[in-house]
Length: 463
Image (cartoon, rainbow, N blue to C red; front, side):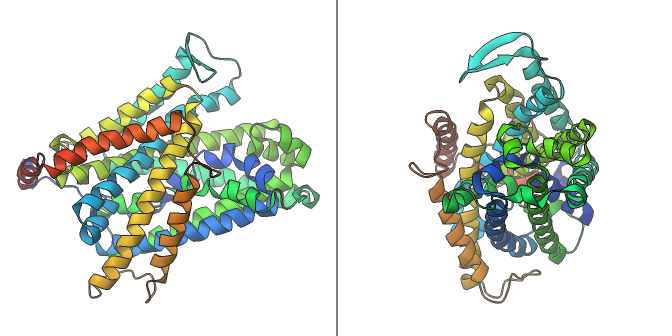
C-alpha cells in the first residue's frame, strides 16, 4: 500500500563502509598524484594531506555525532534544520547537492577521458569545440552510456547499488595496495627529492584539492535512515572510512614519489600509472592501475547519485522542493525521480567536453565546504541548545571539534574567492555556481511563499 511506503533499512555495516570509502577513493588519486608532488614536493604533499585530513576528521566527527543522533535521509538537511531553521537548512542542502551533482557529472566526463589513455586517438564524429577542446560523438556516448547504466542501477534499488559499490571498492583498494607494496619493494628513496617545492604556497596548492578528494564520507548520513545497524555504529563507520581514505592517499603520494623522479614526473600524464609501470618494469601494471581508476569513477559516481538523490528527497519531504522529487518508486522503493534528475544531468555533462572537468571540480568544491561550515555551526548550536539530546556516538566531551571544523571550513571557503589560489575561474565556473544559486533562489522563494508546504504535507501523509 502507498500509505505504508517508506525508505527501507537494507544497508549493512559493510555496505556503509564501502559506500563512503568508494566515494572518496575515486579517479583523483590516479590522475592528480603527479600534480601533488610537482606542486608541493613528496613530503609537502604528505603534509598537505595531513592538514587536509585533519579538517576532514574534524568535520567527520561532527557528522558522526549528528548522524547517530538523527539517522534520517538527507543528512545535512536534517541537522541544519533542527539547529538553524528552515532557511539555513535549504542553503546547506542546496549547497551539498551542488557538490554531489558536481561529482556525478565529473565522473561522466572522466570516464571517456580515461578511455583516451587506454585507446589513444579513438575519437570520431566531431560535434563542436568548447574552450579549445574538440567534442566528439563517440566520446560523448561513452560518458552518457555510463551515466545511463549507473542511473538505472540506482533506480531499481539501493542494495543492488551497494553490492556493485563493494565489488569495485575492493578492486580499487587492491590496485592501490599493488602500487604501495611495489614502491616499498622497488622504490628509490632518492626520487623523493626535493621533499618540498614552493614552500607554503605549494602545500596550499595541494590543500585546496582536499575537499573534493575527500567528499564522500558524508554519503553515510544521507543513507542513515536506510542503514540496518545500531545508531552508534553509523558514526563509528563514518570515522573509520575517513581515516582509511586519509591513509590511502598518504600512501599513494609516497608510492608515486618513490616510483618516479622529478624528470619523469615533469612529462607524465598519469603519474600513478607510470609509477607502477616503472616499479614493476612492465606497462601491463599501468593498464591494471587504470582499470582501478575506472573502478574509482564508478564508485564515486554511484555514491553521489545515492547521496544527492536522498538530499533532494528529504528537501521535497520538508516542503522545500516540488513533491516530484520526494516520490518513492512503488516497486523499487527508491527516490526514483531524484535519481533520474541527477542521472540526466550526468548524461548531459559530456556534451561540455573535457574542459568541464576542472570547472565542475571547483564549482562543486565551494558548495561542499559551505555545507561543511553550516554542519559545524549546527553541531555547536545543538551542543549548547540541546545538551541532553541522545547522542549514541559523541565526538569528545567538549565541542572542540565543532570549533575546529567551523574555523577550517571557513578558511577553505575563502580559498575559492577571487584573488585566492583556488578562486573560481571566470566565466565558466562562476556561471555554473551562479546558475545553481539562481535555480536554488527560485525554489527558495517558492518555499518561503508556502507553495510546496501543502503538497509536502499531503505527500508525507500518504507515504
